[in-house]
Length: 388
Ligand SMILES: Cc1ncc(COP(=O)(O)O)c(C=O)c1O
Image 1 (cartoon, helix red, strand yellow):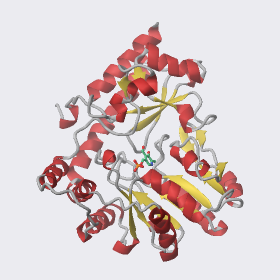
Image 2 (cartoon, protein in one colour):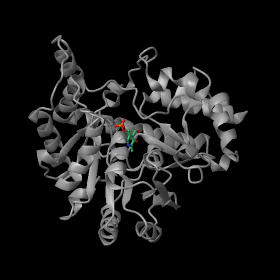
Image 3 (tube, helix red, strand yellow):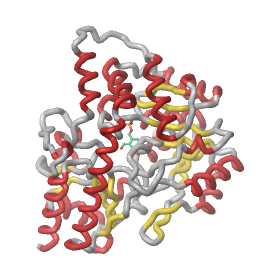
Image 4 (tube, protein in one colour):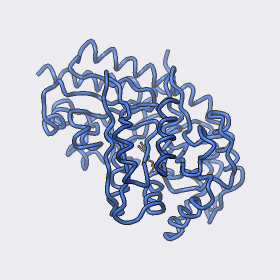
């Protein structure tokens, strides 16, 4: 049965990074673009409707964050994650990546160390290095096809650092950290007085059989846990650049607000506010349908690789629409691997080394947030190229 998610849109000419940025990124304009993390699906109709209504009032002046915006987010978090938050804990931000940078500035000093867990979304690296902080790598371990945290090594790192940038669920390895892992993390953080910036931007994108736990909701002592969330990935509105930090502790909240204030970044854009609120208020059913579609696509990819491309192994995702492909059995170095996918198969993916020179070597990240036909076509192209 055809689903709304099967509908193909031409995004060319919309200044889309994913489409119109291909020449720059891949050196050719015609690869099937399965890279940057947005989706090729129409955003939920309720969001488009709210935006059209707002646009039909022809004055787009300075705007503040209305109470109804905070309500919509607090209700979403309460209903999905059972976490009760106060409006005053929410700090609206112009995106999660800016928040990572702001957290580094607010909670560490020059030359302090910041822990990250590669392979990980590349702005985690630059959030530290942009700000002249040292990076402490606590690499994830791949055990029996599944990534896990090396807690002993993390404990060593925690003795020398004040901040951990946690990716939960994890991009690109697709782990949804479970209760046991997060409890252990909280114990370790408390013992070593570690602040955790928990980037939960992918929290809503969870496959059946897994459950996202908000880290801060798991402890009475959440003062040192800063949670980043947004409807941007979930509802495909990342171009609108609005996210939120949830900071229960007043001192920490003031510290991070102060960083944003130094740039006078208010983030209050009439369109992003409208979309953010409509997403959390009315997006639930759309999200359920999306996850069914993504799960089915993921099953198709798994079956296709097993049948036709056994040298590429999919690390089974527990969440996110980003698949982490283990291509090490293709016996190519990273330059050859990139060349193969771009120039022989005609596919634009993110090379694994972008997520960690060592930990990502031999891997590629595939974005399945596109109509299934597009994904199947891409797999066919990879298969045909591999035959040659
Ligand atoms: C883990 C993670 N954090 C943050 C972002 C980007 O957030 P924003 O666009 O709000 O800066 C992404 C996008 O892929 C992501 O995967």
